[in-house]
Length: 328
Image 1 (cartoon, rainbow, N blue to C red):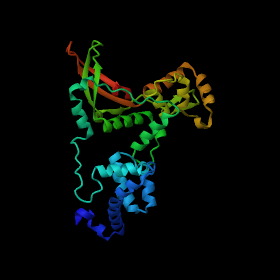
Image 2 (cartoon, one colour):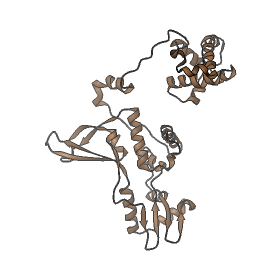
Image 3 (cartoon, helix red, strand yellow):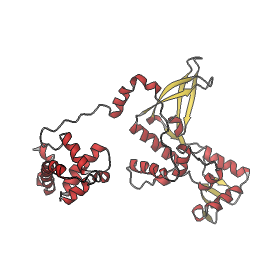
Image 4 (cartoon, rainbow, N blue to C red):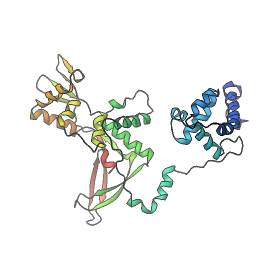
């Protein structure tokens, strides 16, 4: 009994029995529908709605199963062509009530058989930055990637500081490719000998500098408070290799949060970009020195490793900093 109902309390749930009824109905009627339907654009979502399948069958059984098979979202699954959907289920024995195929998985996940396939030539594989971003269109795609990977409610990707975004990307890499990174590091003692090293992502941390401050002293009265670069600046810095902006004034202006004194305050959001850039252009060398320190000491990904030069036998410490260091 438990094999059929899963949990005994389902026996008393009409929703559960409606789902079982529609499972039998779909498995019985789907092959005939495939033979009669010539509209290859007709979606599985439209089919289920037009043929009055129950909500429990749609949302608790068929669509989640399809989304798991095709590694997609529930909404995208509903837009899948019904003919292709039924044909796949037929060819894989998924329209059978009994004698269904046994699905097997590889211990360690898909990365394990990729590792075994590439074992003989793994040292010739080099990971490249494959995300080539155009500022206006694909920036949205990067934001969507992050949003889809964040399960915590209320987190606004656009407002995350750059070091949090770096940490997110590093962990996305861990989940999708593997928990370790193979890198080639140059030995500091001679500046030319290269050695292979393995870094484990869970050991990489966001390090904070004690000298870091978000407040820039303009004069004895006014202070400028900085904010961390936005996601757009992060994409420019890490992924946009074509037409990357070199305008430092633009970046500084975009990172101004407010200017304040003991008696009053002005928020950057109330100013135009042109006004902010003109404000930055009027700063003196001492003020720019503080701004430079703000950017240089920002929290960032950091990891310290020990390497031994095979030629000189000298042991050295190498500090890797920033996202690019762990993708190189």
